[in-house]
Image (cartoon, rainbow, N blue to C red):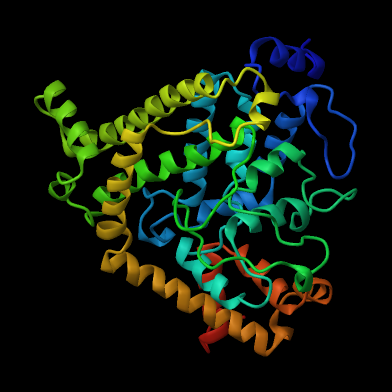
Length: 399
């Protein structure tokens, strides 16, 4: 029989000296007895998997709204792909797979309906009312909003997982109400290295979770773009990274159909980025003389990072996706509908809060009406938000 203490001993024996060990976790906000068969981070992962917020990701937009097609990525499938990429690279680097899996599975719980367009709408509405940002909302969900345990609010995750979720900044004031919450800068952008200065976590599992997210959407968004016909393969020839991938496929396969080519290209894109990240991260470990967790705490540089060459390739790649895909007129039309829908529903709730469920009104007494509505709407799936719009605005729709 393998017990928790045996798993913790395995970690001590086999993980790298700079990896986070479950047996040395800084604990939880509400102390709990350790599980007999699962480490702290395995327990966190399972709590996230079984949460209501995680199930809702199935019907939340990645790029394409759910009703556009069954084969496009949703926020849930994206999350699972991030987790797989994170676990694989973590294993190679000798990091804690359970910790990175928990962080990856939780990283997008706070996304509202209709993707980044929905986030933009909520950010604009909440300006001056405590702000909104999906990473911070993810923290709010796991610390306050999930109602799974009678002993404490939220999921009571370990401090290491919570730290890994603080990807873009410090959390909103989660237990004191919106009035004491610091304002959050506008814009959600997951683009790393942008104008907004970001702190990064000390431990490598959290650094890796951030980049695994980037690898996933940089790769699978182009597959969905090709599948939809909004991106033509000929357009991609202007991007150096695609030319490299296309040349490899042409050399290895004299004849390959479009479906196989598209899927193969996605795998190669992920593999190319993962290999570069692993190689550069290993160089950084040597360069910064990282031989223990204490060494990490003294390092001012990110350790898990791409090479300069790959960073340049990805900059060009992301510029292409922004110009030709994310700002394609059909994507803009689709997402702007979501923005108008969110604004309209939010306004109706504000004008007559009695239309809200009793649980939301109860929360409003504690956190204020803006924060309560924001929490409610951020938790909506695309489908629920669309149905709610019909219930509120179409005269013959049942309420």
